[in-house]
Length: 78
Image 1 (cartoon, rainbow, N blue to C red):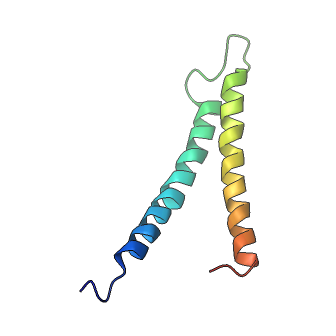
Image 2: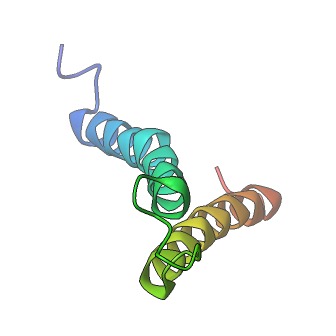
């Protein structure tokens, strides 16, 4: 059966699918959780700077991944 299946290519597709299919939503959820999770607000009612930086880093990573994928597809990538 190995003559019909390229196991290296299959492994790459599965790994990429896991990273994009589970990694990006998890990154987005981490950003939301850091802004709105339990204990997200300080004594003054503001979200601490560290939590905001983590959230915005997560959101920007997701946006850059989506824009990069759109640019790759628009450029004729397969």
